[in-house]
Image 1 (tube, helix red, strand yellow):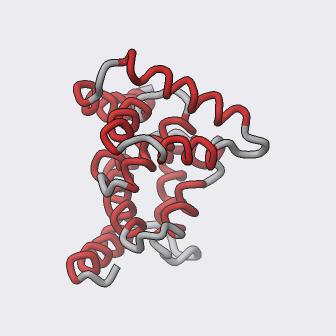
Image 2 (tube, rainbow, N blue to C red):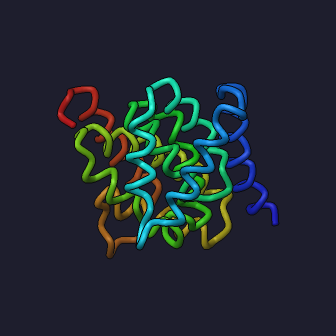
Image 3 (cartoon, rainbow, N blue to C red):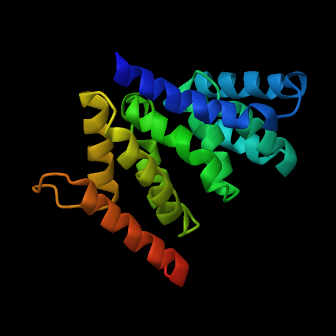
Length: 191
């Protein structure tokens, strides 16, 4: 019970961080409704259509919408908002929501691990190390107080994304070392 509350607090903190950063809901609501519609109408996956719709908007509108979308109950909408911020290199703004989607299982079950594919195959080679570094740090800290299934999701994500040894037992120290290596590479401009 207490660990579920901790996960909810992570999501709530992420939401509250952006509560004062958005423009009026009246301006955003038609766009949000359109995004929901596009996501529902897609044959297999409405994500590409919704993403193209957002890219046609001006950057200021995109940023305001992205922050509003992070608070959406639909994980696909929240992820799309986070992805928009990632494209704008606003990694810190997107990281806590992305980590919450991993911990609550929505990345795996609803988004079908879209994060992993999108970050690794982004046209900007710095996306993966930037997001992995930020989300990885949140997952390492959060896993300590997370329920067992969320802890397993965090560990699985970290093992996959940081290319840690699968046969070896997960240790936070291994993940921290891999994240520190990513940070060094980012500072050197390698990634």
